[in-house]
Image 1 (cartoon, rainbow, N blue to C red):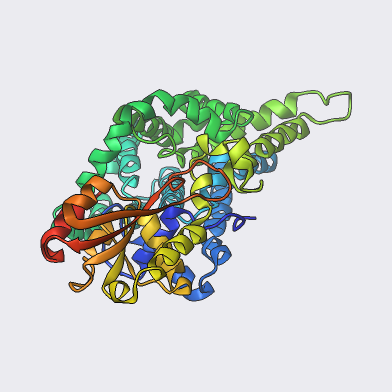
Image 2: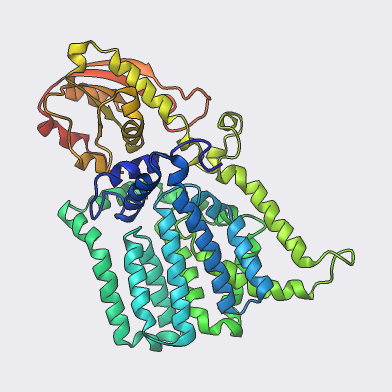
Amino acid sequence: MSARYGYHRDELYFLAAGHHPAFGYVDQPAITPLLARISSAVFGNSLAGLRVIPALAMAALIVITATLSRMLGAGRAGQLLAALATATCAEYLGTAHLLTTTVPDFLAWGILLVLVMRLLASEDRRWWLAVGACAGIGADAKWNIGFLVAALTAGFALTPARKLLMSRYLLAGAMLAAALASPDVIWQAAHGWPNLDVFRVLQGAAWHNRVTYWPAQLVYTGLAIAPVWIAGLAWSLRSEAARRFRPVAIACAIAGVLFFVLGGKPYYDGAVYLFLFAAGSVPLERWLSARRPMAGRIPAAALMTTAMLASAAVAVPVAIPVLPAATLHAVPLQKINYDLAETIAWPRLVALIGREYHSLPAQLRRRSTVLTGNYGEAGAVDRYGPQFGLPQAYSGANNFWFWGPPPAADTSAVVVGMDPAFLRREFAHVRRVATFRNGLGVSDDEQGARVFVVSGLRSTWHEAWPSFRDFS
């Protein structure tokens, strides 16, 4: 089911990045491209194989939530409810469907939460070393874990747990985290901090993100499951039984508010629900055990389980591709989950580029390359191009720009998804030859993409390539 549609544009990008090993990339650290490279080495060009790691990560998140609930005092029933909340959470279902930076990021957050809880439960300051190692590795997956670290620091400072901050092990853990995170920082510095350009582009959607942020927290977790994490937040902040772990509760609240204030995407704080589901399972278990069975025979816990499963049933068509792709034309679920429509028709697009490339006169084709406007298109050509007899794709999008311009002799190109006005500045001849249609009538980023044949590069690629750069 996970492989029903196709690769996501980000997955195509990570596959390409995995074949250009580096300590960092324009828009993310090194771990996700490395995972994509490992997946392709183990499973070949298998989409289902690429999705094995996210599936394993989802299983780990479920175990982490159950572990957290046990540490918070939940019994067997509470642990099962906490695990079920994670297993049926719409956000986690969607996350575990794709190999993106969110997968290792959520996993790193979850492991870090467990380690901090171990530290608070035992007051053994040596846990700071493990915390630092996890934070450093998490930073190599996605920079977002820095917000959790900052929020946890505030949580410790605002509670009696601040005494644990006075430790040489904390200093050693911080140094370990910095050392593990440093490769990406060094790469960014050596390449002019391109991540800052990406952040500036992301800020263009900040107000939209703020408007949708809090409603999305309810929708992304699931309306039937939202009461669990809301109760978990209230219980962990107020209950005497949760007092020992208050720093984590405060950190989860702060992390959510931080992303809201900064205009982050609503899913950035998604891993905090691992703790909040776990915390909510404690009062939920006690409340359910005190309820009388409905009709004298149906336990209240069974009704709650049914509600969670029903919530998942509603969320599944939005989170993962269970419906035929053509359904997205009549029922645009991609308006809720943008990623759905970005996984269709990539081979069809590459086939179109291939037809136009091979329709060129032989003499022109010998000095022609393929240019794309975004990294998804470039990644698709790299993945599917060989079967259509296409050369390597080049693009100015994110790390593709760093992988260099086309060969100096290739002064002509088949181009997809680029502004014709820009092309006319760079080439003497620009001719539109096709418009891409995905064949399903589905509205996505590639539907209606224009294909051009250009020739007569006005300068050299060395001179022209800086103008192609597009970090977003």
